[in-house]
Length: 472
Image (tube, rainbow, N blue to C red; front, top):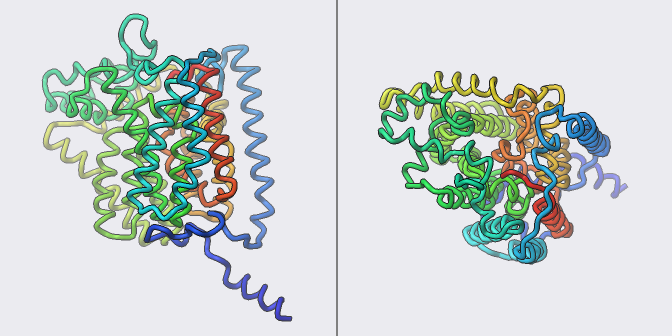
């Protein structure tokens, strides 16, 4: 009888999920055995194997169709659909360094972050781990040249460099005012990456004095490395301290960030978006106000970062209710509209014209040979597999357990796939969703299994780096 009453009491008052109890001080959950949820009973638990099986089936079907209909018949617009990379094995002695760094990250990383290190110390450690992993891995094919090869405009350099941002810098020759005033009109004449974004990327390069491949690479490397501590910052607002640190660790070694982040400007977008998300998810009014400003700045760099704002608003809705979500949504909207209004009235910038011009460029790009019917599945499959099968499985399970962040980020990824504006290349384009996805997955990764997960992520990243040419 006593046992029955205990079970009834447990059912009436289940252990809170980690995302319901955000940490407010370093050391929370430091000595617990894991960062998992409690095993609360319910039908959703029985649905998990079915959901994971469905996701696996979709991924396998997409890979097989990509090979037989895409790779062999060149039907889907990329070299190895649903991915953009090609099979070009190469190795450099730096690969040995990458093995050591990734191995240490898997073995020592959890130990370092499980001790009572203060939050700033944990953030610094995460930045260091991410930086070391990214630099060593991206030198594993062709040495340190791999850090900036993608932006090399010299003859014999990267074939992709002409599509990047350095060729767009001459548009700033007549000053920032003229650049903003005429930006919408110049979009059709710009490289695909400049045309595909608002004016923020070139403005930042201009302010920082970046006009070389090495300088632009340094900016991207910094952005990618910062994503790990910024993921940790997001985690501290919605989960336990231990789960937040776990999220930062997996963000530091996830293949999608190591392979496509350290060598693309999209990592800078991801870092700016993560900073805005961490601020907007706070329950403190003045922090949310800062988040509104940060979000406005973020959307000046990438239209896709509006999706991060939508994910944050949905997460707040599920966590705190519609009143709080309305406040956060209004703040983010005010930041977006306010900054654009300043540019409109101050320098003549035309955001509506810019968006229309960008859409026209997209409609007449390689996207025309990428069929929607395949890429509506191919885009999320490519992103999920490069994020890491363990992470996407954990995020999906967390969504079934009603994690606000998991539901929000997976919903936005689904909407992005259905919208069809990013067919293929989502390993790079959807880097902005990686921090929130890592936060969603982290509470389901136990401390005991975390080294195995980190090791698997690092091994996947290294194998791909040595076997394929990922472009970025």
